[in-house]
Length: 124
Image (cartoon, rainbow, N blue to C red; front, side, top):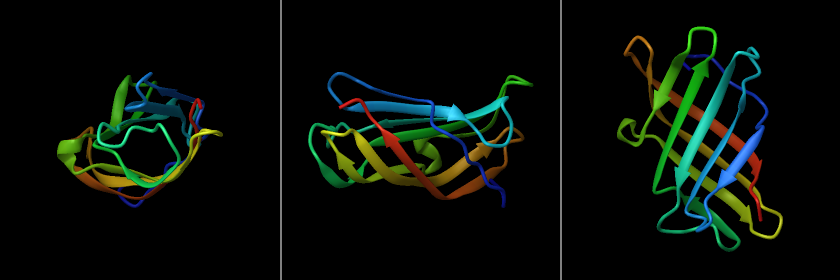
């Protein structure tokens, strides 16, 4: 985030019945009033079996702030945003991966999102 760092604990993960779309979210470590929402579609490689290096067909990230009801930044596919699951275990639902790209700040400035990592559990 423009030289900053965002971290937090994932509070929830939701996946579609066809296992082609998922969302994970949670508050950031910065304040209780902010959080991160990550969306991803896997239409080319649904999450139906174990896999490695599974690239999302479409992904987005929103970092929000409840105090001002604003999005601190929003990154959409048209901002060159990407998400890759490096390791996925279907039986345990464990998924580890990375994400990055560009995001649009509230003031319109485009910033790089670099070094994003996640470790989540998806409903098996």
